[in-house]
Length: 565
Ligand code: F6P
Image (cartoon, rainbow, N blue to C red; front, side):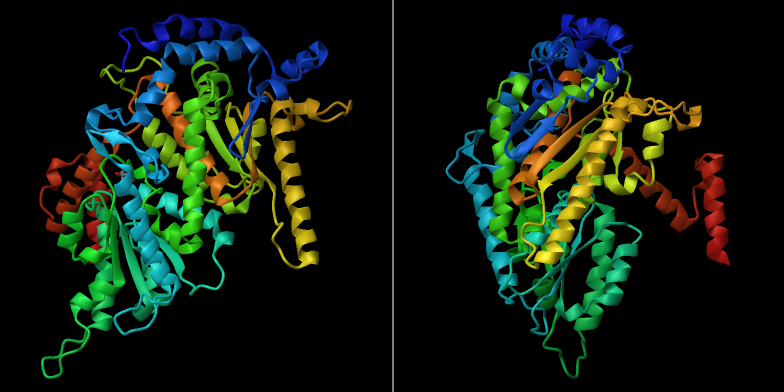
């Protein structure tokens, strides 16, 4: 619900802007020195724990006054009421006139959530039960291809939210693969150029391969063009229509045994040829980038089993309850979101790096790139006014230890101020059976955490991180003062991963609420799709080139020249 006066014209924002004038001059190391002299350490002051996660904001450029000012800003933006509206299923997605109810996908079976007079929970659990039946069939080796062999490879065809979430989670939780079940390998193909798919098609056996077509809209050209190639690959290899000797394997059998569809449009799935029994549905009120919690999560459940998938939902639900119930000053998503706002809007730090120190979180940064930038990369308020303030920063990331050998140079000595999120599990490798290997791997884990803690400390303190009085040339100096947050997971489990993802989902909502923008639409991607369609028509027909600008004409002519060679 928008306020008549823009947020940056209201008292709490103005007070923070005034306060920031002074804070911009204060180096983080000074804040730590002051805390040491006043006997008020920063870690207990700015660190909070919930749902198996610890969030340390002590290396943010906060003073006590900053913290209080941010709380006032959250209240001024009416954040508690906005959280209630989100979770109650109000139509918070104004431009598409619908609620954003990814949180409903992780409600327990005995909960109730009525929207427009209908309880959504039974339908959510019915879908989970259908997923469970499918997963169990695969794990029992009972899902058979058209020639009768058990399916051993599943390729998810999807892009954006229909790819990044399942890809990230299956990778993160690969250790949780149930033992003693028929092994199903899960692969992902998203790129419209077909390069990932082409690779699978050379390696996989059509008799034992099944494709999951994941697309909320079931209109996304990237996914549909991969799907068309996959369908032809299967049909030409499995169906041999010879009128003299009709094959027992017909098109319908191949479609039934080798394709599952996941979408909010059952009509379009049916039109494409997905058998009714293989259609898993979700709903318009789930945004694509918030959808891994339901049927889009089928690849996750195929890898980790349904019990672990439900534990993932449990972790996210625990974070939802925390988000709803915890006071603002102890509320993890609220604090993480406000830290970002402080950096972007008051300290002019417009770059944000995501740095997990755990190889299992390899795809976490690319998942967050979509979650944060597609949600909050907006410049128009809910009232349709152009914002006079910055919104989502440029966000990117990479596994921290690898990034140390790639772009940390810029973090330490470049000219850009960057906020960093360090993410790591406290415990790892407890389940490795062989004692000697376990000891080695645990030592590697400790080494990794040493690097994680060292980097956030060096980014904060700069040269002062090391006791060394020897003068250093300027090219060896570190200025420090780069703010960071650290998120520690007790362990990386389905439960804590669910909580971690939900933490970031809600962080995005917190920021959107303060910025008064809609995080649940993505109109900024639509025009590109339309223009690409028109361009493709010109490329194919070789007509209409004169309607283009001269740069585009030049590029197209270069392509035609290459095609004509
Ligand atoms: O083009 C952007 C987008 O709509 C994302 O929001 C979405 O996650 C992705 O494309 C895929 O969409 P769909 O699941 O409908 O294929």
